[in-house]
Image 1: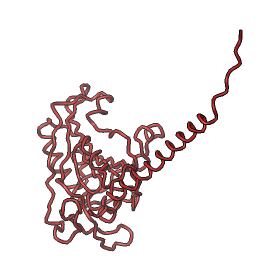
Image 2: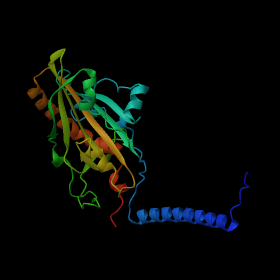
Image 3: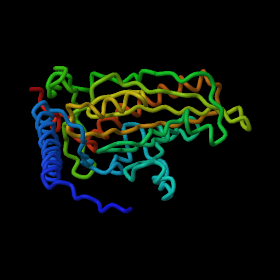
Image 4: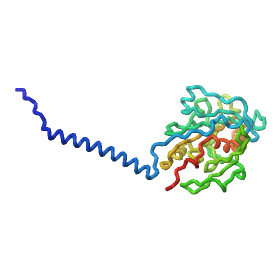
Length: 287
């Protein structure tokens, strides 16, 4: 015999509704409380983007003894999508008109906000083009003339108490001098040496470093830690990569590269910081 289903007591339904609404209220209050605590502690789990002050292609065509050679390379839409940013610059510079041994290609890419892009670096990418890496990657210190920079008057980094170096650059259009804050850290690059099996007489060198939230690092792993500090409200990083090819043995080629890259960076770094965000002005003061 079929039994007529019995209706649940109204009091039970009311108790269930009350428990449900109470749980929802606890979740809302807990979420708001968590966000309030994070704000009071200057902890930022969501990073805000920060725009370039000047577009990258505004870098001067002449940097010290270096002059732009050819036009800036425009990447295809597919490559730009793979790169993960539209803020990039691919440009060749030549040293004292030496087109045989003195040409460096620079690639600069800028990322900001919730960065989830894995940096494209030579040791990961150049093999796909048929090049073979020789030996291990090596971090190489760049020999800049530090006497050209001011280490006495820059703003202090709140977390470390270190003073940001400063440099004076000339604005390309107005020719007016401008003081820029430089990033903290040693100016080093991760360098790899490659060879084309089809043309073993030519040595290829790819080297890079990163500027992230006002600091320098040659490491593709460390850059994410620098740009995602919990105490920073904003996040950005910029990859600077040099490519060099020369008809020399690898030991000679890397020495030539060090000399050329250091000379170009002497003028390039201050001008690049004119484009990147002025990080000391964005930093959250230590409480």
